[in-house]
Each structure stands twice: as C-alpha cells, then as structure tokens.
Length: 368
Image 1 (cartoon, rainbow, N blue to C red):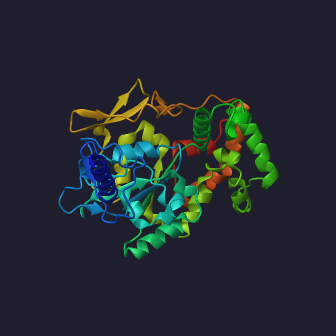
Image 2: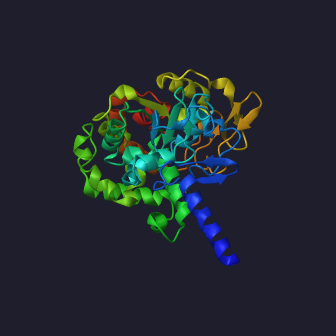
Image 3: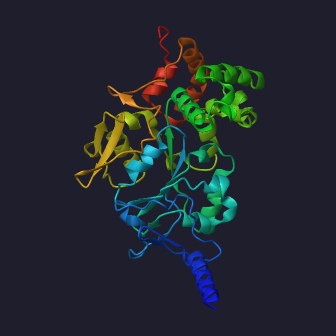
C-alpha cells in the first residue's frame, strides 16, 4: 500500500512538473499550455544573477516575439554581439540559438516564445540564430508569424566579416568537432587542401564569377546542397542578403562589421544601438582588452567584467589592434580573394559597407 502511495505521489509530481514547467537554480518557468511545455534544450538552463530580466516574477512581464533578430553570419561574431547587447538595461536576450524559423517552425509560436526571455512593454527581446540568413523560407515564416500576432516585423542584425577568415574559422571548428576520420571535413588534412578541392568543385558546377554575379547566383541552390562547399559559399553574403531584401525594407537591417566588433567593440556597439533605436548605454568605456584571451571583455556595474567563453576566439583573435589572419600560402589567399571579390563588390553596392576587410579584398596587394 505504501509503495502505491509513493508511486502515486511521484506520478502527480511528474505531471505537475510537465504542466508548470521546471525549476533550476531558483528560476521557475511556467507554461499556461500543458501541451507546449517549457523547452529544456539550453535556452533556459543557465540563468545567473546578472540576468535580472529573466525573472518571471517582475511586474508586467511575459514572453514576447523578438523585436530584434540576429540572422547571421556564422563565425563572424554573432555570439560576441549578443553577449555585449545583453548588458543593455532595456534588452532581454535569449541565452541560446532557438533555431525556430529554420528547424522548429512546425512546433508553433508558443514553443518559440518558451525559448525566449521574459520582458515588459518597455523592453526589447533579442534572439540570434546565424543559420537564418542562409535558410530559404525563413523570411516568409517570420512575416507569417508576426502577422498572425498582429505585430510589426522585427529589425535584423547581420554580422559579417572577412569571408576568408570566416571560412577558415568554420572549417577549423568542424575539424575540431568531427575529428580527422569522420564527417564532411575528414577527407581533408587541412584548410588549404579543402580550398583546392572546393574551388575546383565550384568551377565544375557554376560559371566563372564575373562582375555580374547573377549568373552565378542561379547556381547557388545547387552549390548550397553540397554540404562540403558551404564553408566557402556561406561567405557570399550578397546572395543571401539580397534574398532577404525581397521581403523586408533595407532600413530594417543593421549590418555589423564583425572584425571591427573585435577590435573596436565600443564604437561598433554605439552605432548598432543607434540604428536599432536603443538609447546608447554601451560604449568604449565599457570594454577592457584581455591580452590572455585575445579579445575584449565588457565591464558592467562599474566593477564587474564579463568575457566570452573560453571556446570563443580560437581562430579570430586580436593582436596590436588587428584581427589575426589565418596562416595561408600566398596562392591559397590569392585564389580565395579572387573568388570573393565580385561578391564583395556587390555587397558594398547594396549595403554601402566600408569595412577594412572589404577594402582589403577589393584592393589586393600583389606583393603579399
């Protein structure tokens, strides 16, 4: 009899847990819909004392669709941008990449909201998922979701960087994660060997890249279908951004120079806050360079400092005020520069970008 009672108590507790949510480190999350449940996939696992906005006990707070969405680009500093922005008093930031509009759209809007922070009417909600920029269908899904909620569409943050550095960082991370004997990158001993293969493969599938890049664009879906080519193709920012421009006005996009975010984070964050319509609270005075880590940390509450995780900055660090470039042969660098040059010319045309890395690739030094 006693065992049955204990079993019944456990069952009731389990049901209560599923309906009301879960409690972690004193942080309780509740869901009004027992079918939806609260996502426990990393978004809400690590609340800390600095994330005061994540308490659902604050007056007038609820889960809201993001006012700002970071759409990319992978390995260009999206994590750093989110990390810095979370210290703005009027911004509540998702602690993970929800991947709703690319991978979990069929789970519904309430599921999406469960991944997002609590906020009140005077605050902005922010989430970033770098895969959004390269995933077809995401713009239409965003429009549909916000229309159903009767809300204006959000603003978008696109962090871009030197595509050569981006490709190298992306490849290096994949190499660390999958090892040398498995996965897409397992067949390549190093990045330069991969570049030789990828550029030759692209040449067989698409026409030569000229100043008129639209003929090449017509082959991008096929190129993107080849997983092993994505380290290079996902640095063709102009192609992906122009797709988004078909659905949203250009004024709704904030383009962030990811390399400058590493070297001059204060100036970049000031400009981003202005473009997002936020009061400027984060500036140069809030950053301290950590020589050991090779990038800037943010200072808050006048005394406390918060740095990116140790996993960050393995291939993109700063020395003497510049982002360290990957060690590549002159020939590999030349071929990559020539590959990306027409796309960057197009990118500067549609965005008026004047980043140093853009200028480097558009005006290649033949003596390098």
